[in-house]
Image (cartoon, rainbow, N blue to C red; front, side, top):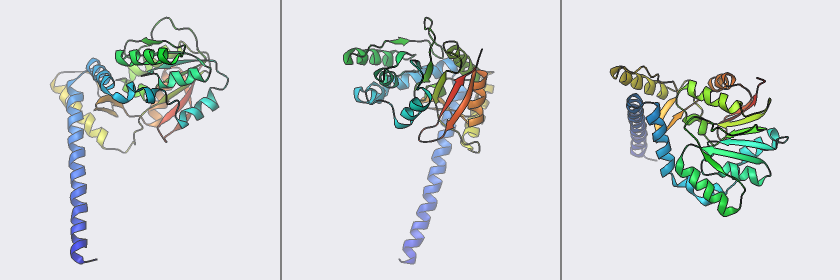
Length: 265
């Protein structure tokens, strides 16, 4: 290999690292500015619009694809003695339909109109005795009974802005569960040393100060299509405890998820 080729390759590698750094910085600025401009209601609306337009979550094949391998493992190990499951953030129905077909009694809800319509249409078309309920954002609809277990649909928990709202949602969910009932929750994991989220929070906080807004921006908040809060293990454990649960299992791969058990009230 010639010296010229090695020299060109090295300069390419340096330029590529610079480009990635610039793009990451621009993304952080973009997210920080918009997080500073919009409040919780607009963040919820942005997330709903994202899912209304995401073809995957309206796709019949995807929603009938069943539980993923890691989900099957959790259900096998933690839900074996359960008969009824409440599915929150049910999306287009993938988890709820799969659980119903495994013999569980299932009630399910979501706060996005289009996804609820998709899930109900699919359940009817497939002859699955299951009804999906439209909910207010970050809330459990009234009228549900008591369940042996609960699942917060894939990534749904991280879309709730603000810790206090997430904890309030967990407390509502806990009110429909028996003591020691298992809860499965999945999310984006955050590396505590990641600087990107510090930049986003600093920019968003500065914008909110200019707007005279007292609405806090939390470390881990992001806005890339949908609002997402990225968790550390300690942060998630703290929120679960405040919401009436004890975390009993935490796994980072293949998709970050945790199992908690409802504590006695």
